[in-house]
Length: 171
Image (tube, rainbow, N blue to C red; front, top):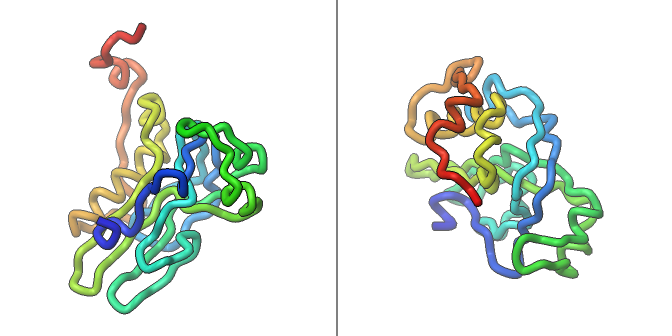
């Protein structure tokens, strides 16, 4: 799995706080076409375990894998201090990395042509109403399928009513 999607969440190594990172700059990659800076509150995981021991917050190549971080932001000290969703934290190794930028979405392309991406958001349904959040994922799906992502990215529209249409009632 790690080679297919480039990285994964690891219990007691990664953490899962609810916070609102600001994604302000993006690498040149088909997934980022047309994406403008955005921020949304979500359960954004970070300190992921990446393939081949890669740092995750910088583009890198190994013998058979090209890795590109797509959504990167530096958690505040308060976010690193916790609490995390589960286990509550804080974890000393997360606190020790204060100031470090973290990847919350990345893409990989394998030498044989396979593609994958990892994404740690998507926990709050209403975030799909954010045009840039949605465009990033739509672009990633098109790129993953091997199709050409348009220069302006994948355009889509959704209303609040459409987002809420089939939600189950919550208590």
